[in-house]
Length: 367
Image 1 (cartoon, helix red, strand yellow):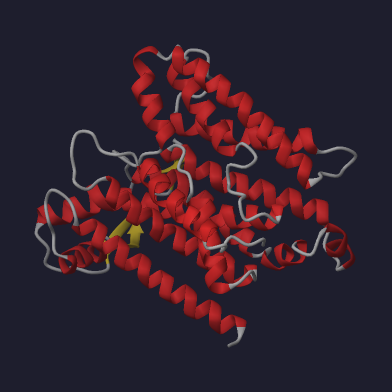
Image 2 (cartoon, one colour):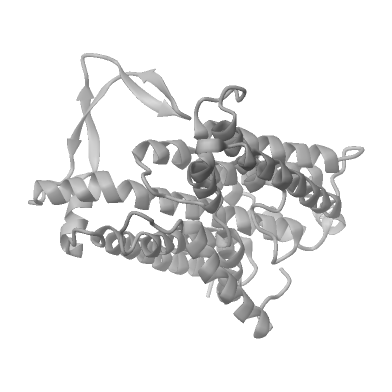
């Protein structure tokens, strides 16, 4: 089967799986709603611009409201759905599900890039300290709000993640070259340092201790459309650009010297891949906290299913990651209660045993 056909078949199937996961997840909760009503409520929420408003509107960008020309919108569909069900689906459940899909999409895509970049199936988006940097930024704001220049938790985590990633890159770069092994070791060292710093801040976090601990576990509770608006644009743009470098990732698997002889600007490509994967990861963990195993397990499973060609592996891993996090978050919030389990605990509880199973079956291969 041709590569383009295989990509289309797998992507279509995984996209369909994602749609099913979204509908089923939105149907579950304290108020049960049948899947058909959920589907109609979601379709009712689709709107298109229908004209201009008399006054200016605003667009949320990284926590700020940017003035834009106001638009009027009209619904594409008008199915007969009870108002209560429409509200529950579109305003209470769907934002959280959309955010889970966005973050899972981002983490799995970044994990695929990192595994190809490091030529190591055990690599994941946190390997160069992005997650630790986000955690440090978020906990710093919670514990010492007076000295952190960001008043927004998402921005503090995002800034911490990117600062850490580029610090690791700067430490590992010498003479215009960035050896992958040095980059990996620098990431491990910086993660260890940030881990100790986070522990110190937790001791002095006072009343914010519970908030900080829950954030470190990774949670989608009480998230809304503003969180989706923060993560989705960065994720989509970053993943689209990363997807355009699938061929270069394939060539890098041959080794840097061979890649150079085949016409790849190795150092520039490495910097671009690392920067974009870090940005995409940062956008995800900034709104949910640290969620592990998505970027490690999902790309590895998809590699076993579709092979190592990143032109197929990259889009399928991203779609599978979106479904995986939607499903795990559904498990995390069900049954509903005052002490909901953070989704990061669920992903680790499911991902770690499955990865150990692959190890015992000797199914963990080099990329």
